[in-house]
Length: 433
Ligand SMILES: [Zn+2]
Image (cartoon, rainbow, N blue to C red; front, side):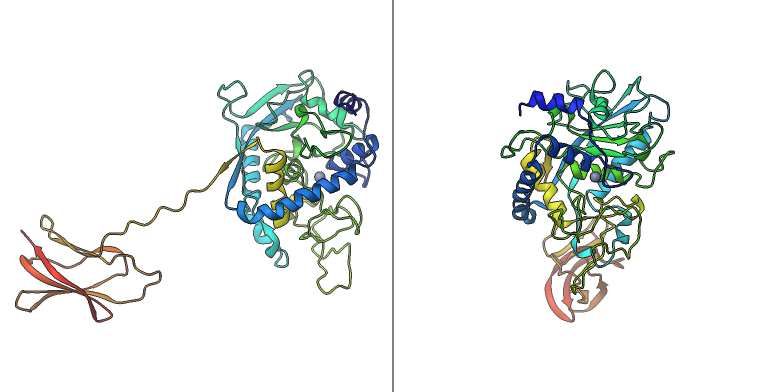
């Protein structure tokens, strides 16, 4: 199907919200819509998804040490003052995204022990753009007033909600190959909160028949309902600021952990247990696909790709992480820059020896490179040339240190350094001139 025709269809067809009374994320609706206009595409997506999965299994071990950084632009499309979220809410949302995509969020302590071994750090960082597409300085937050009171519809129509990305009603995307565009607007319909966010999965896949693109480039990105953006949002709903984490997961190619089907439908992640449907509550005992297998696991309500309240979402799995990183590399290769953390600076190692300062009458000892957790006893003694001990000091187990207690010594002395009573160095030192 030509892309133009697909775009026109997107404009005029609406998508049924289904699966549950409140379809809080538009991803499922979107996939069903694709299938309706292009029968068989879901199956082909499965094939491609599995290919990326294979890729991710190869990549994961070598790429986890790199951090991918994505620059973000927020489009705040507001009709009322409530929609026009403060900069503080946006920066707190950025912090939450960064924490959840580096597994540094404090609530990771709530990940149950059974799932801790498969929890993963995505190593993805998000920064607000500092340059707009024309190279001008920017805060990374665009504010546009709209005449539309809300963008939602019932049933959900992404053609209608996508109006937030048009200049007429909202704010046009910045180059979607360079920026992650996040639109914030009122997604309610007739005053009712339903759709909380949606995102298009990665695009530009060659071997998907019928279309080379899930959507046009100008629509790539994430759309969020204004009530769930940022921490302590005055209008907050249960999923809260973790909704953005969920939608960015779709943007990077993840599926819902229940696979948008039943117990036999997979999300293709081997480390997420099957679940029969979206979970809306933090019930740790829920095991919606119970089996008598000895290693049967409950539903992973901690996973960002469920529908559970944000208070119990605290993890991606290692395979989800690998999948997102592989998808970034394969399908969104121009949107991130890779930062390879510098190796820690090597400690300064002074050459082994004893050094004196005749100006301050201090003596310093370098013990060289000490083994970690060194428990040896180091002692330094000073003798006159005739062998009389004039000073003795115990040393700490530090590579470089001053010798305490040398007062009033003038002249040439012999020093002897011992480790656990055995001499390891001996020499001459001049003090006090
Ligand atoms: Zn979703």
